[in-house]
Length: 247
Image 1 (cartoon, rainbow, N blue to C red):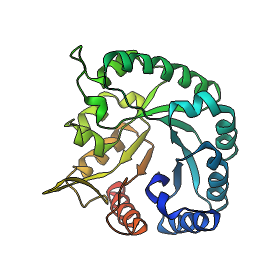
Image 2: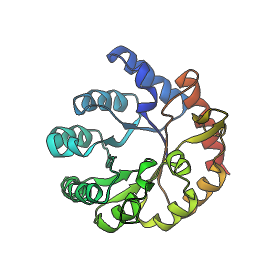
Image 3: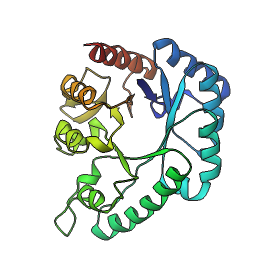
């Protein structure tokens, strides 16, 4: 299933009228579902609009404090619109910080699982910083996260930026991946940029082929920063991804 992380279109969704118009356009492009972002208070409104327009609500991606502090409101809104996953990301750079955070993540994951959802951790590039003990933050997470309840939601752009073999990471963690964030990585003289799928240098055909073989269910398009109209970007990404999935 092809979904869109709505963070991509955040600057266009400034009130209820503009949000509904954006969601309608997302549906017209062909997206089957959306992954929510933003404050917990916005989740119910956006989820309701998406549902009314025939867009599946795949889940929510936020922070661990959303679960620690506002879980019942969040779970109620997501459950009402059929969401299946609650995801988080985080930022740690030291061994002590990573281990302390992992304890919080395990507790949050249990709360999410007990509420009937799957739970996923979404990476950026900083999880691959090497800590003072010689292990990366991700190494520590993989050891400390409860593998029975914590899944991974890999992000292709951030893995590439971290110098990680994207397909190797996905294959080694396949049993814990059902959602994949697809972003492209465009190389310029000034550094890396986010790009619509197919306009960068990531081996997306190879990644998508592997993900299909491994049984990954949801392919989520996201572009953190768009150099042109974000709706044009997500339309290009949809067309490219749909073609890959049909091959």
